[in-house]
Image (cartoon, rainbow, N blue to C red; front, side, top):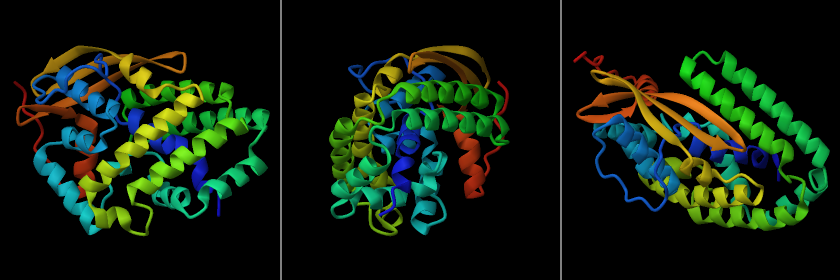
Length: 295
């Protein structure tokens, strides 16, 4: 069994919480927002979905209902995997689930870890620094990122790379604790079989991935990165609103760094959604909405 998919686990699942949107000043005990009539309420609701490990609700709240239905139809037809396609290395997710859920994977993966990574603290710190450098270069050159996204992701990558350089990734005792948790969560999804994601459908697949996302957060915390604390730390303010467009400023604490960003929002049918998400999904599905009209 190859360990290659396991190396992609952190960026795949951590991206579910950070790469799409990080914006809210609410905490886990706050009541859920049912409707979002302002840009601030919209991003608050989205981060609450992530805080509760509910990617299905996150997808529903990211785009208008009609566009969500089109995305679900495209998923069933095998032509789209949004919102998973918004994650880095999304094409590795099926192989990752299959690797984790395979029979005897706990023993196989732990044995592979012990051969390649146990005690290799210096090598793993060097790898974290190298990955951070490559990721920063990729973000800087990616043409499909806006200026705001490029600034945000560069800061986020720097924070994660710094965490990786100090995290006890080579500790075999932590690996023995973490791997069985991830294996059990992956098996519970029921999504490890070939083509399982498409056959299960978008809504049900995302619902099943929620507990895996939550378990991965717990594993990250073992290694010194508290994803939920980062979500809870966000400060949010409305920077600008002109007609159907708005800018939301946010900052949050991640791995000892303060990350600052601006999120572009767009109003459709009285509700606010991340503008970049709308643009990319409509482009992927071959649909296009008329441009928002000024007030």
